Image (cartoon, rainbow, N blue to C red; front, side):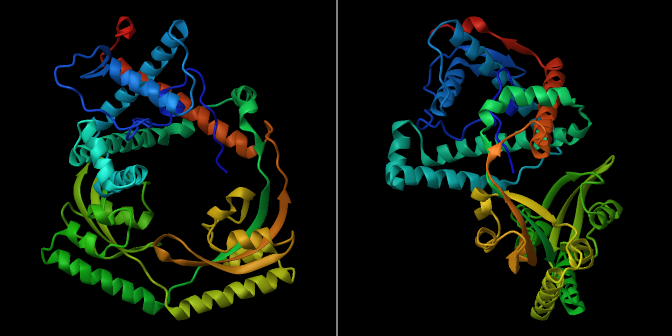
Length: 452
């Protein structure tokens, strides 16, 4: 369960606002800059500036999101300064991300974000023609607006990638129990109640591919490898054959990675492969991979891959269903849950879950209906569902019980874990911003915040 904490006064923009730049201001379409208009510069960050107009647009976004803005005076000036500091921090991180050549943005993902935004805008205006007319009134063409959206989406993605990489060090940031208690006391009035939940245990059975299924996947991978060895473009082969939905549209691009970031068999092959060479099919839990290392440097490689999954046969799936039915029969007869899970279950699947009743719809189809209508101690399943790539799973489930809604408490393990993570993020982000600020020219021009 993910708990949403309210924004804290003075918190850095990356965590407090939870956004970098809006793809479009909520109040309407962004206006094109008018030629010859001189705008006030309210901050300088390295080779970038923040203008008075940009600051006012951010304040309008906050108001559109429900934040009350103080009337002109000292209160508004304080808010302007806080928001301006947040924008400066965002620029510092964006500039660092732009210089980090190891961060790779998936162009297909950006196009998808832009297309979704265009579709939403078109629906909001009623038709594409009405939307384009609104764009024209603001001095935009559809092509120009699309380019604007893509620039914003790229900035958001780079920003997220950079912070995600820096947050890999988060576990080393100490957080004391007293800090967690203080955070809870400050935020408890905003947390509401812990929602009613259902608690259940499960044993997930995975269809085991037969030798014939493994051989068919390997043969397909070898066929694709031969095409690459014959000189066909590896990126184009990935677009045609790879089943990794996250990378196929970008030609199998994985970006730079170090040891410890991929599954062992994959990274062993990648780090042993000469630059420019194409690997033999490499088997991992995801299937067979053909890997091409394009560049390498100290401790890192940049590679592409093509994934050919292993698809269990119908007989494999029927055998898995028989195992799942056997698991249920023996579990209902009183055999140890742990012994059955160890013998038949998928070790990567959680064996015990607590899910809010209002989020049962987020579980795979069939789970929510079964859990709502089952009494504590009863069993359901096997429930069939699919994971990434369409792979099937079979879950045998026992409902342990139901918890009514109740106030959050400071000793709740789940809440404490999320508070700890939040505080670690804040502390690490402060360090990152201090580090970037120390080597970047930053100037805040408060005198430029007067009425234009």
